[in-house]
Image (tube, rainbow, N blue to C red; front, side, top):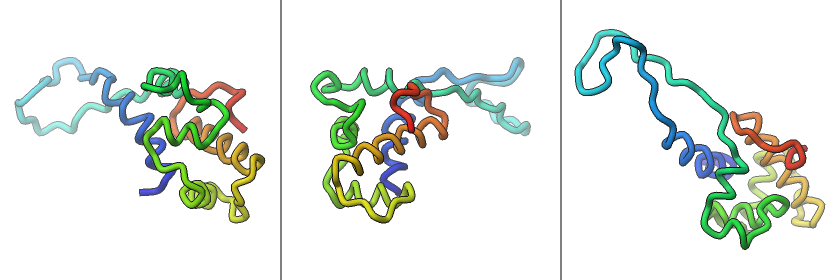
Length: 126
């Protein structure tokens, strides 16, 4: 799995698992087998900021501007090699780990979370 995929799953998976499931009127809600296709699940945006703020340790980490702290908050390896691989996934081959590189990487992660169904404040995106 890609590093961005791990970030997305760490944020969206927890939020989407907590969403109530929706059933079409007249559709069985459990156990009974039917020949009809399952009803579509409603898709809603995940409030990325709220999900991250609710995590243990969020108040001690600067996840809003630090890619390292964001990855730590999600329980991911924040080493240079992992960040370099993440940067490559997001289209940057010249990542060197500088402050500017890390700011770019954080904004790209937030922008891509927004593009994949996350509600991310504009000041955190590119």
